Image 1 (cartoon, rainbow, N blue to C red):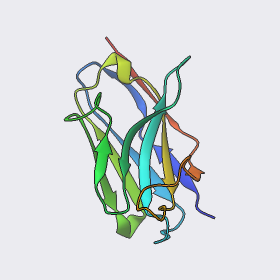
Image 2: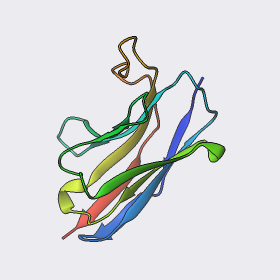
Image 3: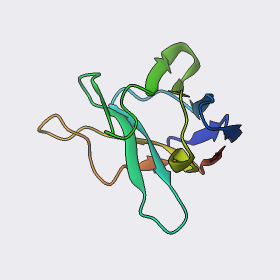
Image 4: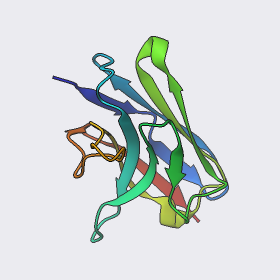
Length: 123
């Protein structure tokens, strides 16, 4: 089974940057969807960025222009570059992966999840 481990979280001031890493135990071609989610205390888990089976990344409106996903298939790693961080970006960030659907989307809820890495952005 696929295992995902996040790293790179930490505490930064508003306007700063962090790069999160998601290391996968193996690359399975059939797992065509990869993405990042986050959850702030007392709030629902939300989608941050998801790369679809056609390799198109969809970003949440709140992070567009600030966050970028980039893969390194040779290292079985997915990065989330976060720039211009805001306090509202704080939360636990999770990497996730899932098979594609017959329609070309992503199976939801996502099938595989990491344990998360904490991001704290101070004012």
